[in-house]
Image (tube, rainbow, N blue to C red):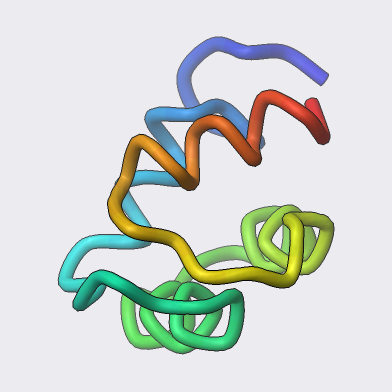
Length: 68
């Protein structure tokens, strides 16, 4: 996958996580993405993340780096 604009890029992921109340878990990330009308590729990406608590966007990006 490309890491540019759109698709499964880090910036694209963060766009759909707007409004997340940290700390949160993977379910909280998915709920926020769904509220923000995320496409299936972003929802699928969230499902690939580690099932743990995320303290902030930086934690999500670290987990993203492990799956992309």
